[in-house]
Length: 314
Ligand SMILES: [Zn+2]
Ligand SMILES: [Zn+2]
Image 1 (tube, protein in one colour):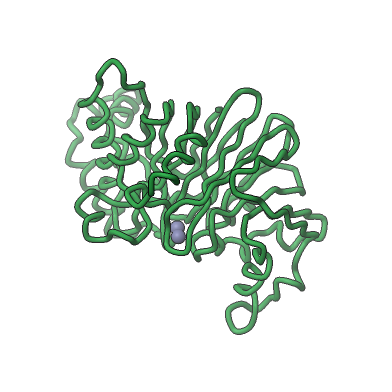
Image 2: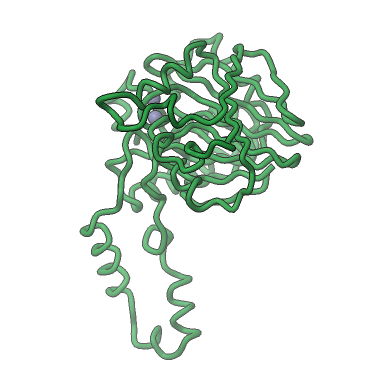
């Protein structure tokens, strides 16, 4: 399966500000030497050697991840504002979509009213969630006075599929399983297994709030995952101030991912107050933390910041 990140930010959409852009340009200009401007090759080399936070951005859209399965199905995990970008930019020709919801906080549903395919009568939308009233909840955000178009008036053909925690559901060739995780009002993490590969989506989870039973269930679900997308919103210091807010820290993520034998960890649901530099620093901290404890019995893990536009073959 192929995974594409359309929205990776937590809580609220976060466009880059003029000051942030100017700061990047200033930092780049300060690094230039006359040799870097000699010819096209030296200019390209200069750009290639700049730190990632200067030449790229994690992006400001809220949670939306696409899975293109090997049997040509389109899964969409959460419907934050990244869903709008999926509708605008994806070259996916399908008009049938399988949408899985972790929960219904604004940052996970706000893309639906701005999603082009939602206004196409040919669209067939399968909604999966363990909440029986999911469609009603989604319809509420598209009602007066919050939005000019009613959910019912613009809706494509919708099929709702009730998920049951821990009970696998087959969607085409993909086995999908969800479990309840600690978050205010609860959230669900999903496992997607196809052709011997396992992908986990675990947004909005507070790992430090897991009780023993939940931890055991999560370790079973996450076990040996090829790719794990995991909430890493806060620094340790901020997590201490914001305990019970429902989010995790990258070092707890590393410990937990390793305890499950995860191969590739993608830090996700980035804090809106953090700059690109903060988020890439946090990712480097996670890598150093993993390297600092590289006892032979510990599994090897690769760690990345989830960034808008990333496309990964699992
Ligand atoms: Zn969220
Ligand atoms: Zn949430």
